[in-house]
Image 1 (cartoon, rainbow, N blue to C red):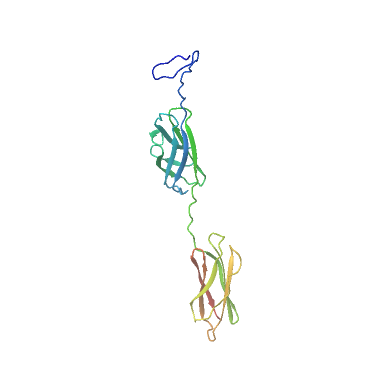
Image 2: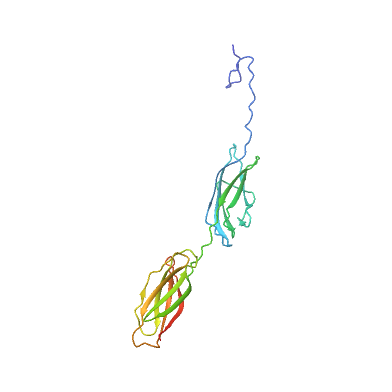
Length: 235
């Protein structure tokens, strides 16, 4: 017959050994997410990003955790106000400024501690954007006016400033008796392209001077370059 235990207790059969209750061992913190919001440009200027870490303390009772942030990426200035370990409730967000002139990926580290080693660690990667290069007008490298009997041929060679974009070339008359210019389409492949235009010398214009300009246009940017004066003097 089983012996009775204390009032309200549990009956324990004779000879039964009740093991002692061993409290659970504390465990380290767990990082659930580590993210950033905001763009960094490789222009050597400070850019603001918001960095957020979400972590869990699996112990009961849960102690207050601390959070630290750093980077070992070369050529990067990283400022986040309180970067060293500081207490807070998850999730924790900081406003950081990052300055770099390189487009190499930037590795940001975080360490979350709850008093049990090892600390939980995580990394995130921020890839800086390249500096936007402002478009520049095309470059006219050569222009000429050739007198050939009653017909004159104007020519020009030009290229886009970036050496890759296709361009167009046109001609405009800037002085002398008015003539009708017949423009031939721009030919060739980038970077060097060329175009010609012709006009017929009007009668009774011996000794007259005609002036023109070649205009190179980059359709991608709309920027143009004027060649300077092309002079044709009739005989």
